[in-house]
Image (cartoon, rainbow, N blue to C red; front, side, top):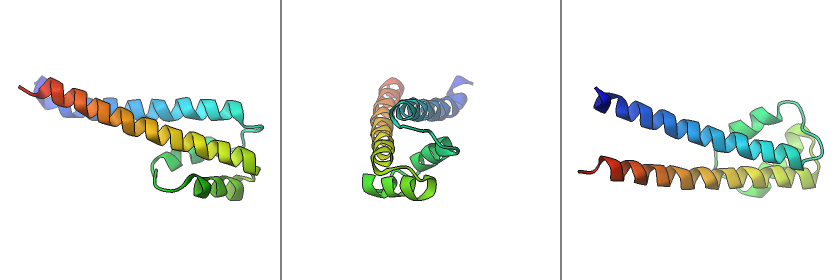
Length: 104
């Protein structure tokens, strides 16, 4: 029975780990910007689903949609890029661990 639940457990744990990384980086970003505007949390999490794009493009979205200044928008874009990189590294490590544990 555990073998049937293993894929679901692994996927849910990986998604939880990626969400925790996003929340941690969002918390760090909140501490660094001068003012955290309404719906910025949603934009931060939404942009984590589409990691493609340069930091400058992400910064322009922060300036255009929420009215952040250039410095704050660049900080937010940098935190998003760092979070995407951390998620990629954790996902690769997680898949490696799972592959090592399931190999016979």
